[in-house]
Image (cartoon, rainbow, N blue to C red; front, side, top):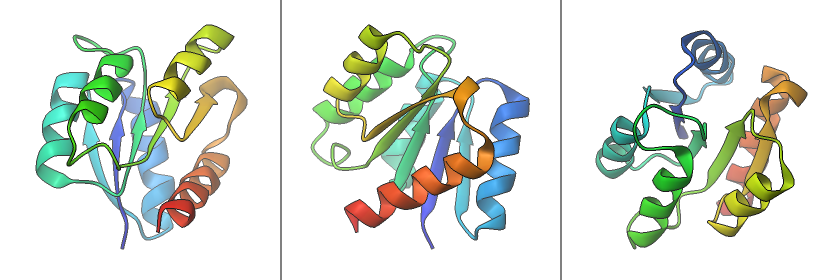
Length: 124
């Protein structure tokens, strides 16, 4: 069973995505800010991370940078899930190593589940 870490400060959205993924038999872990997210990535070594960019404290770009600097975490795929839809933000996220970049407003939870499955298929 694949373990997914959702780093998202919006409680409603985080729980909605978690519920959808649990229905698909994924194991879920959650973090509400970048600092907690980094701790959980290091201790839990999830199979994939769903990462918001606008987070209290350390933002998503910083989380991604820290992951890619750490050899043991660098191979964990990250899907950015953000309201930042500017091309600069998308390019920056992908350049930092995200495998996908989803603008929240454009995706429903079922599509997010599909993206997670695609990313896990690519990495396994």
